[in-house]
Length: 463
Image (cartoon, rainbow, N blue to C red):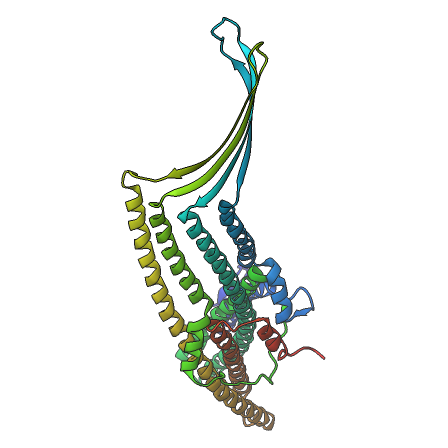
């Protein structure tokens, strides 16, 4: 029905817009909002510098930045002083005492008067069973600190390498999620175009939209994971590296040497640092038990003193006194304290032995897991390498078909997405091989800085 002549039309504006135009406008607005959200997160992790850091540089920074490693260094320095402290109990102890003041009135009525006293005392322990055991315990404590420092040095190598390759792994996931979003976006556009001409039902459009929404969420999650991985690396090394040197393609995937898993377990049970620490802790607990038992024994000291007393009182001469004597002490009744301390130390020694047994089992498990992990990652990397080659060939064939007019652009993007996924999976498998190798060497306490240099030699430095 037309409007009366001379009257203004009252038809709402949205009625003048077709359903097709409305739908596209809504999609454009929705996609724009999602794109803003993705870009805002992506821009926060964009490189701010053009310099790429390598693994060796990051590790060198971590040695002076990581708080756990620095703490171990200071703890080792402190432990080195425990032996001289314990040994000092065997050496002579010389002390000087000086006093001055007013003394009381004497019997003849004179006073008060000033009096000064100077005393020099020498003490030399001749026999003290506790002191000997405490010296043994101090030596064990120093060995524990040295083993703990070595263990944390290995842990720093492992944590740095893990954080480094986690960043590269997350970066590959971002690239894959972006290619996936691009492919699904084109699929959605194609579904909408076919729906507009009646070739497909509305369910195809909704399915494509659901896949697109999921791809947007996955891209946001991948970008957030990348940012988190960067923060983890920065936490260890302090390196604000926006670019990391990636792994080259010529990394050799060699199996563990020796190839016998039992040989690795035997080596780990012999020299694993955590196991060494547990053994020393058990020995220290046994020594503490001996210390508590030794408190029942007598002690013998040589005590010498020289004292000079000076007064201003007339007729009262200065007094000099020198003594040299043996002092024997024997605890007889301690209210049950010694018995309680012995019982407590015995229980703690039993607990330390159980902890040692647990650490032996843990070390065995870690070594076996590390050995199998290296071999599994080698097999997986080789399989994914072949899958990547096949995917690349398929992508090349699809692209050739697109140029010939037999394939669509959506199929090309789908192949590109599959190629990115295959490349990401292959890179992840090689990262797993490196980390599993480092874990195996750490379990056997053969991990050193040379392994960092070895890995660094297989990074893809720009020419």
